[in-house]
Length: 268
Image 1 (cartoon, rainbow, N blue to C red):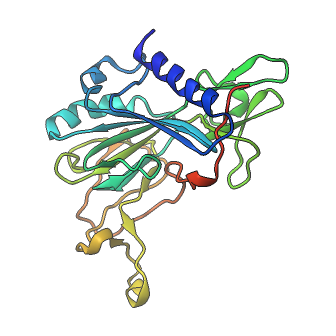
Image 2 (cartoon, rainbow, N blue to C red):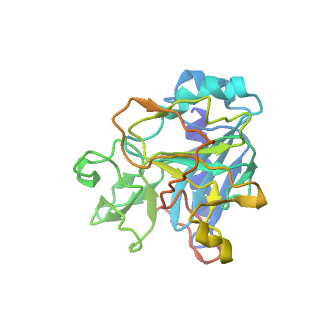
């Protein structure tokens, strides 16, 4: 049994023990990702962290921090291979705290991955929350929804803001924590066909809001990033932090649920 399989068994055991209980978040100080990931990422397992989220939202988050720019830039093209087609690239300002686990990262990536858990069908067989996903949940362009729910013994796309049952992550998103040194957007290529959600800046409040720009978090000078959300015809693009206009797309980057009110989705 490989590392990823042992991780799933451990998470399943927690669910069986708890029954219906408060939210469960399981953390392992190692990257317990599947062996199907690119071999080039193997050296980073020891510095990574695996967070299993088992409450109203079911997903696994792999956090890979980097302390050296050379290591990150070597790993970055391999990380991009993990992202689902059409899934956004999410930019976050350093330091970034993952609210579910409370872990903080100064520079690196979070890969938001399906949980691999199962849901019991009416006939006693089980649906597994992992690829391959049925074509019926995909959009007309072949893209996966962020989350799915089990209805009538099959997966269906979870409707935004309206959901019955537990939501299971289907789409693989990548969160990039930008510090400007180890992770420098001026030095890396971003796929041209990828939507970008820039979460590094907050909208200003009060009288300064009339400027129409986006104020930097933490009282720093209002540096700007030109991020074009949506699709681009070019194969890749660079993001500059020295332009005058910021375009920010909105949407859920990852689950930020009130853990105290959610029950675990238990097998059976």
